[in-house]
Image (cartoon, rainbow, N blue to C red; front, side, top):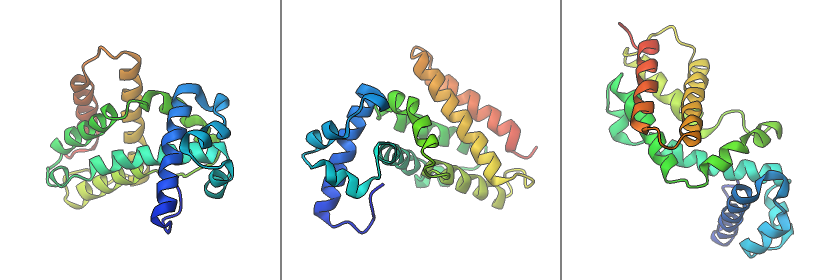
Length: 194
């Protein structure tokens, strides 16, 4: 994402760039997206994009990071934090799916996430860190098994949710509540104390 020390005018340009890039990546894919077209739609010069991002892969990483932040924000709801495990799994996964429903370009962007990985971008996403924080809280509250490796469990939980989202996008007629219940129940059996 763009630097945190941007002034309001710079921040407005960055938002315009990310909005335009999201549309182009979702509509045309990674290879066919041209930075000159993104710049034109954002109302900036191509050089302005290069001041913020080294290239197209880093720009995609910025678009995906912004989408990840919306998921992390949804998971940070105080009512979720106040919910005991195992009910919290249902609330957490439900919040992720609800945030996904608001992101109409999510399916196309998720398909492009391999470009971000290949570009060597951030190893720890906002979503992953938020999942880790919730699991750490469950362990601290002695509501989860204490022998869990937070990083491994968070990555596995993240993978389960992402896989379920991809499955739901491939078959939109499936009831998301059923998918959420299956993931939450599996997580509960796996992580919660007997």
